[in-house]
Amino acid sequence: MDYQSSELLRFTTAGSVDDGKSTLIGRMLYDSKSIFQDQMEAIEATSLRRGESEVNLALLTDGLKSEREQGITIDVAYRYFATPKRKFIIADTPGHIQYTRNMVTGASTANVALVLIDARNGVVEQTRRHAIIASLLQIPHLVVCINKMDLVAYSEEVYENIKEDFEKFAAKLDVKDVHFIPISALNGDNVVNRSEEMDWFGGTTLMYYLENVHIASDHNFIDARFPVQYVIRPYQEEFHDYRGYAGRIAGGIFKKGDKVTVLPSGFTSTIEKIDTIEGELQEAFPPQSVTILLKDDIDISRGDMIVRENNQPRVEQDIEVMMCWFNEKSLQPNGKYSIIHTTQEARCVIKDVRYRLDINTLHRDLEDKEIKMNDIARVVIRTTKPLFIDAYRKNRITGSVIFVDEGTNETVGAGMII
Image (cartoon, rainbow, N blue to C red; front, top):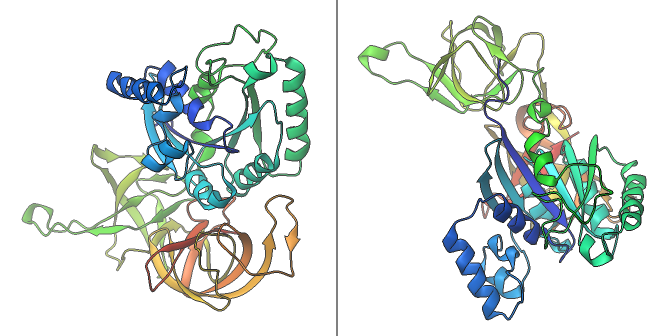
C-alpha cells in the first residue's frame, strides 16, 4: 500500500510584520526554479521603480495591489509549486495581530507551520501567539526559521539563545515536532542552498526538510470515517442498479468486503466496491476521493457517514468547541448560527461561553466573555440535529466545524471540537 503516492505538503508561514515571510517564499520559488521568466522580469521592474538596490522577492507572493503598495501581506495568499520530490501548497498568512483569523484559515489544513523569527528581535509576542495557534490547530510539524542571520553576522550564539528561548515557551504547548533552522531569506542562506556563512550549523536546509519530512502519518488511519457528499444514480440502462456514495475519506482505511455501519440510521452493510476516476480500488484511505458501493439498498443521503461497526464517532447535539471568531460583529450569546460539519449542515445556538483565551499568555479570561473578531474562546453549542464528531486532536476533519451567519451567509467563525 503506497501512502506516499499523493504526497502534497501544505505549509503555512507565520511571523511578525517584516520578519521576511514573503521574501522567504520568494526565495524558495526563485532558488527552486519554480517561477516564470516574465514573473521575474515584472518584479525586477517593480523593484527598480521603487529604487530598491536588490530584486524584492517578496513581490512574488504579495498578490494584492494594496499589499504591494503598502509592502505588507493582508490576506492569505496561496502559492503552488513543485520539485521533483514533492508538490507544495503555501499559505502565506499575514503577521498583523488583526489578521489572526487569516492565520487560522491558512493553517487549518497545513502539515507544517513555518514560524519566522527576526534574529535581531528574538522571540516576540507575535511569535508566541503564532506558536499557540499552531498548537491549537494541531499542526503536526513546526519549523522555526531564525531569519536575517546576515544582520547579526551569522552568529551561532544569537541562534542558540533564540532557540533556547523558544523551546522554554514551547514546552507549555502541545507541539510534537519542532525543528530549528538559521536562515537569511534575502541572501538565500539555508533556504534551498546550504549556507557557507554558517558552517557551525549541522542541520539541513529548509527545502530539504520540507521535501523529506514524513507526513503520511499525519492522517488518522485508525478511525474509519466517510462523510457522504453525493449520491450517484446514473439512471442509464447499462448502470441500471448503480448506486454509489461519493465523498472524501476523512479517516481510516476502507477495504472491499468490510462490514460498515451507516449513521444516523445505524443500518449495516458490506462494501461491495470502491470506485475512483482511475478505476476500482481494493482499499482506500485519506485523503482520497472515492465512490463506495454497498451490498444492501439502504436509504443514504448527503451528510450521512459510513463508519465501522465497532469504531464509531460520538453522536452529539451538545458540543464544546474552541472557536476562533472571524467577524466584526461580536459573537451573540444565545445567538443562532448555521453550522457546517464535514458534509452535514445544521443550525445551532450558542449556549455558553466558558472563557476567552488570552492568546499571548494562554490565560483563561472568565470575566470578560465578549468574543470579538480574532478572539479565541471555549464555547458550548447546541445543534438542531446530532452531528457525528471526533475530538479535533484525533481527527482534524471530523473534529472541526464552521459557523455561518444565517442573514448574510458569511463565515463568522471556525471551531475545534474538544
